[in-house]
Amino acid sequence: MQESIVFASRAIFLITNILLLYIFLTPRRPFWFQITAFSVTWITIFFLRDILQSVIPDPYLVGYILGSLYMIPCALIFKETINAKLFVFFMSFSLSQSNFLIFLFLEQLIFNHFVGGLVLTGLMLEAASLPLIKRYVSPHVRNIIAIIDQRNFAFTCFPLLSFVLLAYYGVQRTYLLSNFIPLVVSTLLILFTYYLIATAIYQTIRNQQAEKQLAVQREHYRNLNDSINAMKTMRHDLRHHLVTCLEFLVKKNSAAAENYLGQLCKNYDDIAIPKVCSNQFADALISHYLKAAQEQGVTVNTNLHLPYNLGIDDQDLCVILGNCLENAVEACSKIPQDQVRYIDIKTTIAKNHLVIKIANSFCGSVIRQGENYVSSKDGDDHGIGLASVKALTAKYHGYCSISCEQQVFKVAVSLKLPETVAESRSLSIPGN
Image 1 (cartoon, rainbow, N blue to C red):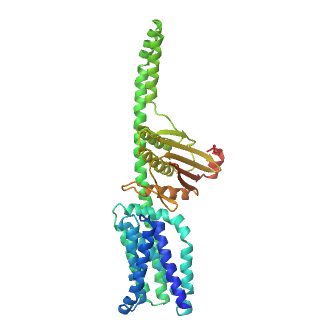
Image 2 (cartoon, helix red, strand yellow):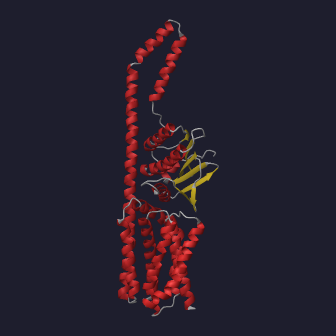
Image 3 (tube, one colour):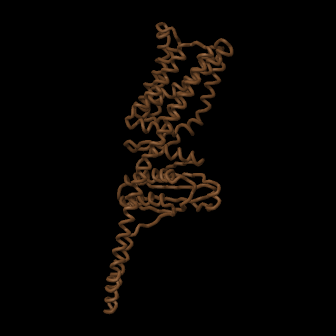
């Protein structure tokens, strides 16, 4: 019976840690390769266990050494940098290890010997928490990974040190209350440190996005200032334009007057900067991407209802809009000139939610891993956009839906508004 519990505990521990890798990282290999890599590693560990136990009598130390071999399929399967893989692997391994040790200590303190049932229960609770980890923890870990991918190795050291510290408690195997308390305190400190890292990374990303947004705002205001100056010049010259038109009309040359007025109206249209919505921050951002789309020959259709005071942080709103529109413009820019390029943007307020829908044409294929679509972009910002959007939708108790069919990519985001704002601005959603 005890052997069955031990086998079940090992199986759940292994499966949970593998699933955690898939929650935080992105596979790049075909499914058959993934199965083969993990299977070969498991078979290798199975045969090495007896060999190592003849040399190293401590079964827990053998387990830590052999468990680290799963870093090999992790390095081969997933697409992130080796620094990010090391961070995620040892973070998952060490936290699962702490969960195992806490329940093992409790079992020893309560029953004074190894029973296995309490440990198995703890591992099953960890496995049951995977959906919550995927929903609430994964976006923040992906933010950390995005920074680590910028060749920042410093963050990788912490999970390695945490793994070594917890391995010490496991190898020591002195199941006393005086050791159990430091183990719990160490685990809480490790979790708190991960929280601090995630908070610092989140703030770093917000600062990066704020700098980007400020650059867009500066460009928008520069264009606006140029437009104002141009309008002042034209207003100054308006008397001369009127005199010219009057001269054409006196000479009964209506065709020349019509052409002159048409050209004048066109010049006024060219220097004017259209206002796309009432929210000045969103207006500047959307105008920026509208201009970028027009330069790429992309047709943009807008149906926007974005009031100024939504009860949503302006920077959060711009992060969501900016990431979605940037991806849409980039996808359209890859379409050949002789094919249809378009972006549809619709925002509305309905049922206490701000609903944002963006659809764009694209060519080629998209990469899908589970419920996620993988970005094909390269560079330091890879992976930040989607994680930020999902984290923000969770922050506002909303949802983010992504679909792709018939060469049309669609993103739908819903953000819950504060009740006082929603009641005053509620509208019905137009037909899709």
